[in-house]
Length: 246
Image (cartoon, rainbow, N blue to C red; front, top):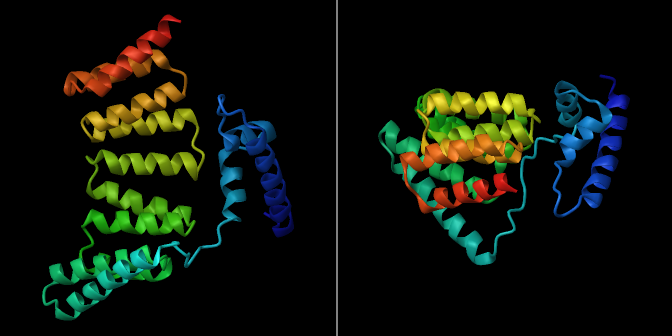
């Protein structure tokens, strides 16, 4: 794509998106990005390429901590650095590197945190936790492709974890603008991989309701309630039953 065309496209996108946000009815929420896609007739691949021009690879950001909060994070970071110097096993070194990375991330030092988590990954490449940490750093750096790569690595190691699927699906929704059919396929895959974990059922039910498929959402909430008779699930069932009667 021509660089000048990309800049023009980004400018048009920013203007129209701003207008959509300003004009959006409070009680009739419409995702402005999806609406913009529909209005301009852009497919997902074009939109992803257009938005990639907005990514600056944020290396550092002020976390806006209070003086007290900053002191706590800095003290923990110093403690972790001390543990690293004393560590003798790979397990101890991995733990120390992870704590250092969390400290750097907490101070908004994304580039340093990424480099630190990569050192931890070298020590324990089969530990899914480090890839979740890298996913979060890359997400805040606005490096969507790297965020996707790392959450997929985490899922490959811990595919039964519903929270990882939630993160992955949210990434595909917010940063890659997956359509409803693509998201439904991801939810169904997630349900298979997690053996229909109750949390995954709840996530899927919420998605179905947002997609205006109330009947299917109700059925999924009932399945969740069969697994765990949580009063909150019962409330969702009763709420949807009432809506379907309207």
